[in-house]
Image 1 (cartoon, rainbow, N blue to C red):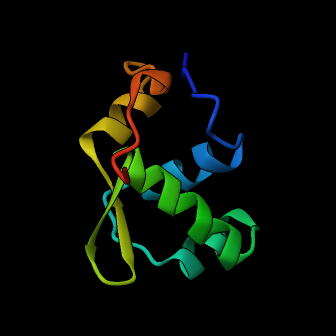
Image 2: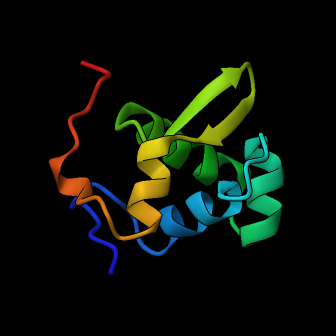
Length: 87
């Protein structure tokens, strides 16, 4: 069972992570199209997910899921234990 943190927006954050779960690098626009949300909203959520280490930007404009993100989706990580790295 997944353990989301208070800062997460459900079910949007889970859907974003699930879209990235296949190992593809995707843009916010592509993710937004596939989860029926606006690109702006997805971009904001990706910023938070990246700050907490669940996604990363390997290249400008593209995101991918991290090992922590995969652990969260598998129910092996309590997201409330993650620290915001944005300072």
